Image (cartoon, rainbow, N blue to C red):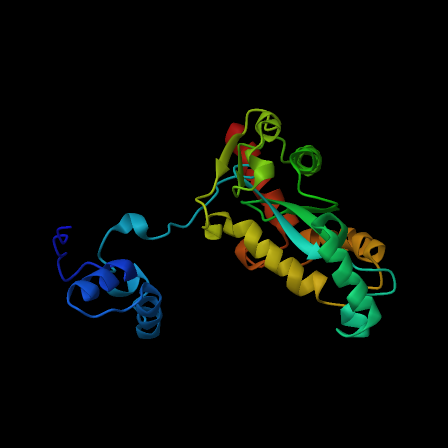
Length: 261
């Protein structure tokens, strides 16, 4: 097999290419070892050694100009809380923790709750519901609820729905439920393309899921609605100029109406 033509010095070789070239010179080094060395040297990403190279590889900031322009949707899977509290209350070696582990091993539906969330990319207004699974029918029903919830807050037109490539979002039933909105699925294994809802998921984890010890799944589900009100109407958001998402939304809706007057 002929050896490929070497690249110019200002271009990056992949770990596989480096391992191949070394093997051709009589040095047997695995690709995994090369990857570890590149990481240790800070050369594992193209922009570190070739910032002036192909600009198409540099992530571009995704911006929205009006409410409803982009609505980001995602599902976060969390462990179900058993009655009386889980391991965070009783400890990892407790009988409650072992019961939860056995329930998880019997199947994901019995051991997990799925937080479906929709975030308006302009205002960061967010709607979240705790649901039993992430099947397509559940995702479609959630989208209908989210559309009605956004409409009640003044977002009457959703132009684009951004999701990952989960099976529930690839289903034909989900495509038919968009009602004219453009469905944009992100590049596989690139969660930053849906970064607004990914960041929201992290806020949920830090400020809600792990902020207190829960004694039952029903308790956590009830408090989720209260926390959603706090997030949307009271919590300052850095991306909204320090304003709560609801205040940012009102300003955006006012600007949109003014543009049509």
